[in-house]
Every structure is written in structure tokens, then in C-alpha cells.
Length: 333
Image (cartoon, rainbow, N blue to C red; front, side, top):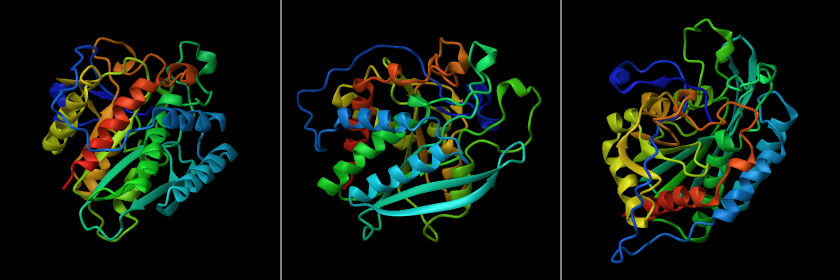
């Protein structure tokens, strides 16, 4: 779903530009251990799927469009309906081409009285270009972003409903970042010096909604909805939050989702988790679908194309991600 460039494992220390995801396809399913007792509420994959569909129904959610405004209003209303304290962080951000973007980070908080907090986040905007589409005529067409954008948000909205129903021991903040996917198009050719991806998380990192905001750790959901998705251990995540990576991947195995959460290293990605760590010093990880043996920069086959549509969204994948993240939260003491 995002706008980054793949970073090779060997060069991870010098993180470059922008791309989105790195994963391998290894379907070694890990059955749920009979002795493991789930502590979290059941994640509603049907609801998550419905939220993905509702976002797509608005059309492309590109900043400065009426569809973007309408979808943002919907997301705010749903989070409020689920009992969250919601803050809308609006800002005018400058894109790679000098265009001014009316951006809107949406922040929902649960258990505001709790000092120990966990941060969950995804991006809700969509790519203004289908710049990886096979048909060059589509390159300037905005994408629907069913997977690249809507899937992570759909999972977080379904999680929000459970947070209202059963309060975990930690406070939870959900941030839907804007202007993540407005980076330079692949067809532009020339490099654009600067950090032009993840503009919303960069802004929030420098201007948090709460002065001095921090969290125990952060979890980013990016492109988490396709069938047979594979979530490898992203390199930057391992570098800054190895214990969180282990916590999430081991929990997935305990729940029986080992075929999705592969216990192998993927590549490195410049994504929202990089800036959350860089500016707020919150150890953060990226759960992102990646195919080591695939083209298209390792991302799913319809990445940044006009075919990133609902036909590619799978409820079982949404369930694996949503239940794993819920379990991690509810296991916190």
C-alpha cells in the first residue's frame, strides 16, 4: 500500500527512499498449540472486511479531493462511535512537486488514564498514481487502495470495536496517518532528494498530539489484506524493536498463524514506523506483506496499480493480523 523503495538487507544501515514491504512465500503453517489459551476477544474479520469495502466505496482517498474529505469524516465518526477520544490533526504539507496537501491525521485514544501505552497505526490515504501498472495509460490514475491503505485501517477499526467492549491493561492509541503515499512516481525518473513519503507520520512525529507523547512500542499495519500474504520480519523493525518483533511473531505462531507470519528476515522498508521511531523514539515494527521471490519491488502483484481492488482482499488474512495484534495487546500486564 505504500510509497517506498525496497531496501536490500545488506544496505539496511543506510535506509534509502521509499517502497513498501518485503516478504517471502513460505507456507509453513504452525498449528495452534493445544495448551495455549487465547486471552483476547475474538477478532471480527467480517467487520474488518466491511470497513475495507466502505473505504473503497468512497473511491481513491487522495488528499485535496472530496472523496478524501468524506472518508476522513467517516473514519472519525466510526472511532467516536466505538468510544474513542478522537483528535484530528490537520496540516498543510508540501509534496515532492511543491503541491500543498490538506492532510489530516486521525488519532483515537483508549484508556487515557493509563500511563503505559501501545501505539497502533496505518495510513488511510491512497496513491495518486498507478505508476506500477502494466498499462502506461493508467500511470496517472489514482488507485482504490483496497490493500494499500484500506486493509490496515479496516483491521484497526475492527480492533477499536473490541477495545470499547473489553478494556486491556494498557492504554491504546490508534493513528491513521495521512499523506503517506504521495511520493514521487516511478515514471518521473529523476531522484527527488528528501523524505517525500510518509508525510503525515513525519509531521506527527515532530508535532505529537500530546506534548512529549511516548508509548511502550508501536505496530504498523501496511498491506495486510491479500490472500496468502506473507509477513517476514522487516529489517528496520528488527533493528530498533527486536523484542517487539519476537513478541508479535511468536504470538502469531501460538495462535496458529505461522503460515502468514514467517520466522525469516525480509527486506527493509521506509514506512511510517521509521519516522515514529526517528522522531518519537518509540520502538516500532512494520507488519507488511512481502514476496521475496516476486517482482514489483517485492510487494503484492497489484501494488500501485488500478487493480488494487476488493477482489484481492481475504478475510482469513485480516483475521490472522487482527487476532495477532489483539492478542499482543491483551497479553500486556
